[in-house]
Length: 191
Ligand SMILES: Nc1ncnc2c1ncn2[C@@H]1O[C@H](COP(=O)(O)OP(=O)(O)OP(=O)(O)O)[C@@H](O)[C@H]1O
Image (tube, rainbow, N blue to C red; front, top):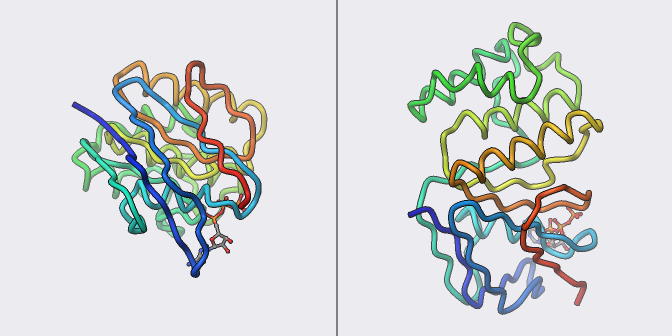
């Protein structure tokens, strides 16, 4: 069964303790919002959850495939959006998921536009579409609301709700308010 859990996890970066003894346990349908001021360690917590950063202490338990959204999208700038998304979706065995992901992020009309020509907000939506098309049950989203207008923000909230309703798990680091009913809050405080 899908699960993402931290048990007593601490993170040290650049010799500095960012957070200590953090525990949470996300089961199908669960979400958690990681909040706190700039530089406190929100992105670092997401990276620990992604397995890109080793915890200094504690245990991370992951059951299920993870999809990670970070600032720099891995989409090929030279390819038309649908083809760039299709490249990654095919690797995940999810080629058929691209159209629905484009639709969910209101990007269908931009399917033939090269990724490099998309605006900041459109590129962020494209990166979210890649997560949506991945078929991964665990979504790790680092500042997914950056660059999104109000309509796109609502699309993001709908996407998260739909993923949870389908048994997915979502961990979101955000400095922007994101509507996610029933989500836990992991508040990081400056030391
Ligand atoms: N590769 C690294 N090596 C050393 N220190 C780093 C590295 N990356 C980030 N840090 C430091 O870790 C701290 C936490 O950074 P992090 O990006 O996790 O914070 P954040 O809460 O996500 O910040 P923001 O809200 O500004 O995105 C910062 O002080 C940052 O300078």
